[in-house]
Length: 209
Image (cartoon, rainbow, N blue to C red; front, top):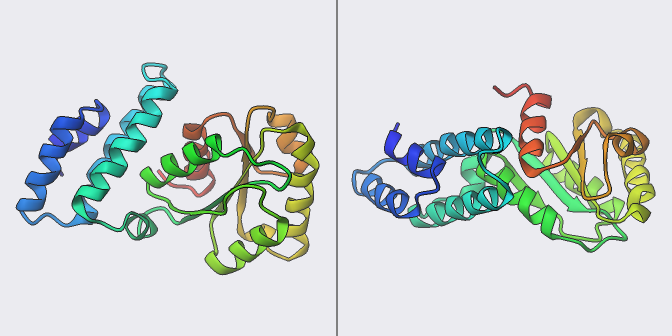
């Protein structure tokens, strides 16, 4: 465990982080172990975000620094994450082409130990069902920024249930116009206001400490 790397990730100190990653590589430390150190730092970033010491800009910056570090070690980020917390399928529901929020969530989830399958935007119900059957995720995320897409989310979740797949996954929703009332209406397990909320809810729903 490299406390220097953990602290650099938590403090968003890119220069120290790059130097430490390179040093660990030279020492022959396994890529997965370096990723785990980075994820520990990301946990601290999440706590600071919850405590309002960090804001959305820092959260996005942490995700970018994490990706840079992963590229430096030459590791397969998805492979490393698959060995950690399981699989997360994410997409913006059909009828909506907004992707900024979705992209932030997929990046932050990936940095926190999840193997992320990004379905993109304007995703039809059939693609969600196919992804669940193929990737067997523990958690599915559905994003939307249009109130007109609420019925689409509801239809999608009902179809996942009709396909006999609902009991096998937890479904989280998020996006500007969403709230807990929306989650109740569409039949989701939880509403996530932020990307970090998504991480915490996913861990809670999957009983990850």
